[in-house]
Image (cartoon, rainbow, N blue to C red; front, side):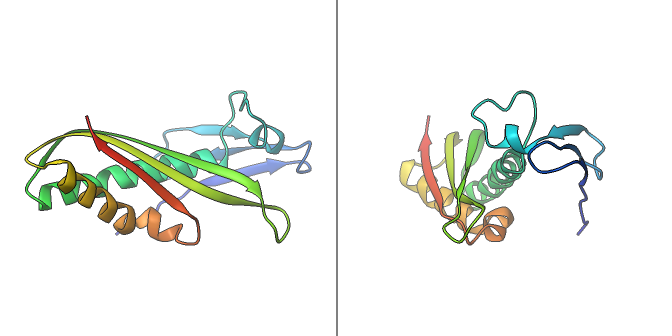
Length: 145
């Protein structure tokens, strides 16, 4: 299996500096990052580690769920997955990712709501990104449309 690479160039202090994160393996883009914007409600056109984790988690989860639906005899027509990654104070000092909320709505042929829920829960546990984030509380809200 391949290794994927991202690179960040940072200039300045935490509070006044800024950087750019480059998705090196795919070459699809370079994105601005800034700590003040990372901790603000309005990201102001910059991304953050939390948003990048959310992107990784939602896409990985969608792939895993589509595979498990097929294994259960269903056919996924569409899956809409959102991952909300929350940054908050760490009781030990600094900051931590305090939780991830996955929400999925799907159109699936061949599975009832219980079958979909079973596959959705198994995908949450089996997704490689979920495994990498095992020290974080991950919640799931799953339903058929």
